[in-house]
Every structure is written in structure tokens, then in C-alpha cells.
Length: 84
Image 1: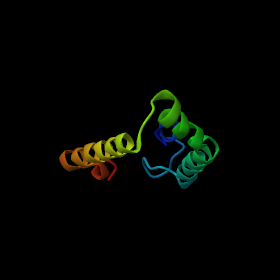
Image 2 (image 1 turned 180 degrees about the horizontal axis):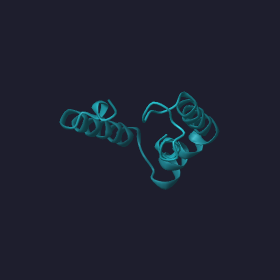
Image 3 (image 1 turned 90 degrees about the vertical axis):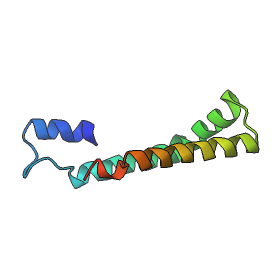
Image 4 (image 1 turned 45 degrees about the vertical axis):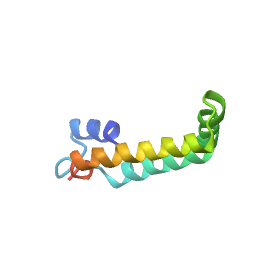
């Protein structure tokens, strides 16, 4: 969203200060949904089966490690406060 919103702000197209217009947020969400629907399964399949063979135990450990990393990052650096 920043790639679209920053030039809009720089060229004076945003009225009332810097904010993300609704159409920018909706277009970003639509692009993410379409990407997940059209190519998401192939990416997951390639990463989980073709590049690295994962057993159910390994994938469970990888997901747990990712979750712990995210929670620790959020604990020490409040991620939701960055945008407010």
C-alpha cells in the first residue's frame, strides 16, 4: 500500500494529510486474495514437497518456531502500534 500511497501523497493527490485511501486498501486485499487463490497452493506444494521434503513433525516444528518468533517480536516491539 505504501508503494501506491507515497507517490499519491508526494504529488499532492491526498487531501487532508497522509492516509491510505480505501481504494488502495481494497486493491491490495484483492491482489492478495487473487494471488492466494491462483498460485498459493503451487507455492506451498513446491516449498513443502519439492524444495525441502518435510515430515509432519518437521512442519509442525517449523510452524511452532515461526509462531514463537512472531510472538516474541510482538512482545518486544509492538507491531500493531507502528501504524497508529
